Image 1: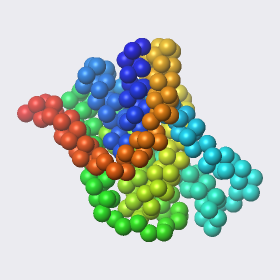
Image 2: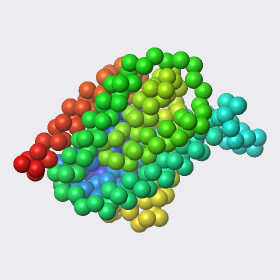
Image 3: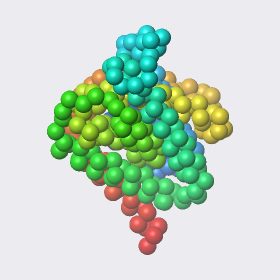
Image 4: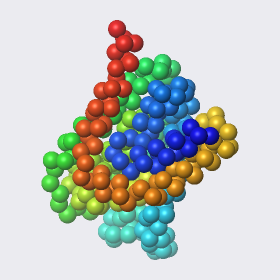
Length: 264
């Protein structure tokens, strides 16, 4: 149970940073704890339940406003509230479609521990490079549109791959599209709510829940929720100032070292 609490605490901290909570958790689970890669991936996804609950609490006012507008909702991007709901619906559908395909592909492929860590390392490096590129783009007034709904849905779907940071690639995507950093963070976290909820339901339907006890599962969820709720505000502020792309690249390179030994 102690390991589950530790994993939950790490998830609660890493989720708000553009460094891939899933990728870094998998690195700890496989590299340090010796867990099976597939079970580690399932457990890492499962722990998102706790941080999902903390996001819902943190953005409760936005969610209440969205729910209030459901009765008068009209698909499209002409109205601000309709635009946000349309964006969330379309991006979630795209994320789900791509995410299921990638998740099943990862489950089918038989990875050695070294190869799996290598995949995580490569994905972390890609995340870091994308963040670095997005830093140079100037912001402008931008409204949500269909093109962005598809693009962000694809980027979020890629985060099924361990090492691809969901918040990192989506926020970077918004910045590359010249959104304001505040809007980029807000939209990124709001779109995570239906996506993570769908992912947890999908794990259950595909019978791919991690092979852990009920107590371990609850311990991980509760710890990730509590720590996530305590840290989300301060860590979002920190993530705007600290160059986390450097951290991503360095950790990614370290994760590739075992693969070099495996290949040569």
